[in-house]
Length: 122
Image 1 (spheres, rainbow, N blue to C red):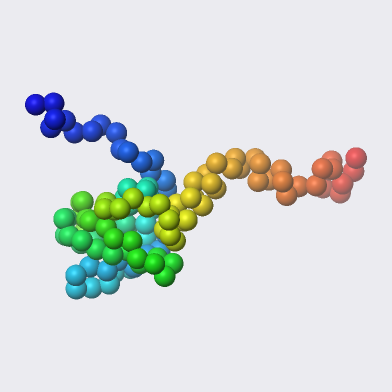
Image 2 (cartoon, rainbow, N blue to C red; image 1 turned 135 degrees about the horizontal axis):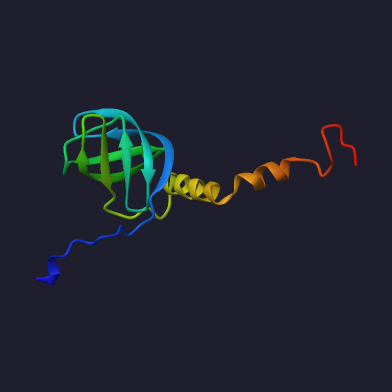
């Protein structure tokens, strides 16, 4: 019965983010915040809908379709039936990953003048 094995790893790298979205369920619109995002799904805090229900995630004037995989009273995990490959949410994911690649020391070095001390003594 090897064909019933559950995969032990996710297919996509999850990235911590903070993206305010509106989630449209069957009967209502709910504001939430995506706190964990990948090409295959997201965790949305502040919004909850029944597991296995379908919803739309509105962000940046665009809609991304999703299916609720798990839900608690104040958050839920969704899977995208179509992997993120373009659009506003995908661009936000890429920006978050690009920002994570920049080491904090590099940010500070780039904004400092190449002088010694506060008064610029050399």
